Amino acid sequence: MPTWPNVRADFPVLHQQVNGKPLVYLDNGATSQKPRSVIDALVHYYERDNSNVHRGLHTLSMRATDGYEGARTRVARFINAADPAEIIFTRGTTEGINVVARSWGHAHLKPGDIVLATGMEHHSNLVPWQQAARASGATFKFVPVLGADAEGGLDLAALDQLLTPQVKVFAFTHISNTLGTINPAAEFCRRARAVGAVTVIDAAQSVGHGPLDVQALGCDFLAFSGHKMCGPTGIGVLYGRRALLDKLAPDETGGGMVVSVTYEAATWKPAPERFEAGTPNVADAIALGAACDYLDALGRDQIAAHDALLAQYAMEQLSVLPGIRIIGPRVGAPRSGLVSFAFEGVHAHDIVTFADEDGVALRGGHHCNQPLMRHLGLTSTTRASFYLYNTEQEIDVLVASMRRILKFFGTA
Amino acid sequence: MSDLADLYQQVILDHNRRPRNRGKLPTANRVAHGDNPSCGDQCSVYLRLDGDRIGDISFDGSGCAISQASASLMTVQLKGKTAAEAEKLYQQFHDIVTTGKEPEEISDIGAFAGVHAFPARIKCATLGWHAALNALKGDPVPATTETHKD
Ligand SMILES: Cc1ncc(COP(=O)(O)O)c(C=O)c1O
Image (spheres, each protein chain N blue to C red):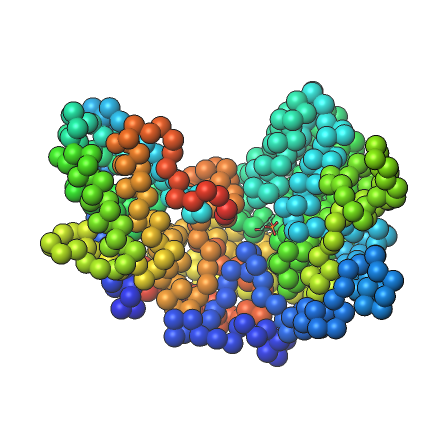
C-alpha cells in the first residue's frame, strides 16, 4: 500500500476539502471518480471532433465515427467479446437489462416458463424481470440468499432445485452491491446452459474492479455502466452473444437502425446498430474507451487485489467496534471492495451525516435492495465501498469517525 | 461539529432514545403510513379523532434519529389539537426546518432549527408530519417524501 504511488494525482476531484477536512471518498459502489485522461477525452472530443456519427461525409463526422466505433472495439477487447458487434452502447446497466427483459422477454417468454433471478439483485436486475414475467404470464422465482449469519452467498442447493428445464432465463449479479459477495458466475452460466436457460449477468459492480472475460464466463448477455469504472455517466454497455442478437427484434426504433423504410414498413440493420436508434452518446462512449485504457494500464488483477486488501483491512478495523453488525462474507472469505454494516441503536442516515462532517463520503440506506434488506432483518445499512485510489489511511479516518459517532449517541 | 451539535440537540437525542407515544393505538380510527424511499425510513401514524379533535395519537416505524425524534415530538404536540391547529403547527415546523428560524414562543419544535443546515435531512424531519396530516385528511395513500429515485 499504496499499490500505485501516484494514482491519486490522476483524479482531480480527490484533492479537495469537504467540511474543512480532506475528502475521503468511499462511495465508489454508487459511482467512481474520473481520472484526468477520461475528462480530457471528453474535452478533446467536444473541442475538436464533435459531430454526428454514421451520417456526415465530412471530416469531423468521420473523426467522430472513428472515435465512436473505436470505443466499441476498445470495450470489446476490455471484456474479451468475440466481435465488436456484440457491444451495444446504452445509458447504463439499467437500460441494458431493460432492453433484454423487453426484447428477449417479449419474444421468448410464455405462460408456464420460469424467469429466475437471485435474492440479492439490485432493483435494476429484479424489477425488469418481474415485469417481463408479468407481461408474458411466466412465473418469477429467485434463488434465496443464505441466512443472515451465513456468508452472504446464494443457496446453491436451492439453485440446483430451481434450475429446471422450465427456466428460460437466469439473471444474476456478478458482485452484490450490498453484500460484497462475488458469485461464481462461470459456474452459474454452465448450470443454466445445461437446462437450456439464457444467462444475463449484471456486471455493474465487477467490470471495473478486476478482469472480466465474457467468453470465459460463457454468458449470453452482460450489462454494465461506465460511471462505476472511471468512465462518464450516461454511457453503458449491453453485451450480447452475436447469435442471439441477430435474432432479436429491436427495442426502440427510429433513425440509424434501419436499412430501408417505406410509408408502411421498415427493415433493421444487424447488431449493434439495430439496438442503437437515434444519435448515440458519442462523447461518453469515447471517454469510456479512455477509462478502459486507464484501468488496463494499471492492471485489472492489481485493482482486484487492491480492493480486496482494503476490504479485509476495513473488516478487521470495523469489526472491533461495539454493536456493529457487518453483513456479507466473513473476514477472510472472498469479498469485493465494499463493506456494509449496521450499528445497534444508530441509524445509517445519522452515520452518513456525521461521517460527511469528517469529510468521509458513505452511502446509507437500502442500496436499491429492499427485498434483501427485509430478508436480513434490516431497514438500512451504511456502506463503505473502495476503489483503486483509496488507502488504508482513509479507512483509519473512517473508523475514527465511526468511533466519534458511537460516542455521541452514547452507545460506546 | 457545531452544526452537528445544532442538528442533534438534546431534545432530539432524548426523543430518539425514549420515544413518546410509540406503538399502535388500539382505539385509532385513522391511520396513515409514510415512506422515504431513498433511505427506507418508515413511519405510521395512528389517530383517534374525537369529532374534529385529536383525542389520542401514536406512531410506529423505523428510521434515523431525526425522523424518529420528530415523529415522537409531533405526537406530543398534536395531542388534543384540532385538524386546523395541526395544520398550522405543521406550517410552523416546516418554516423552522427550512429556514432555521426559531419560533417566537418557546417550543420544543425549535430544537429542529438545526435541520435547515442539512437540506438532505429535511424530509427525515417532515416524514411523520406528512403521515399525520394524511391521517387527518383520511387520505389512504401512503405519504412519500419523494416521487422516486434511489
Ligand atoms: C449491482 C448493480 N446493478 C445495477 C446498478 C444500476 O446501475 P445504473 O444506475 O448505472 O444503471 C447498480 C448501481 O447502483 C448496481 O450496483
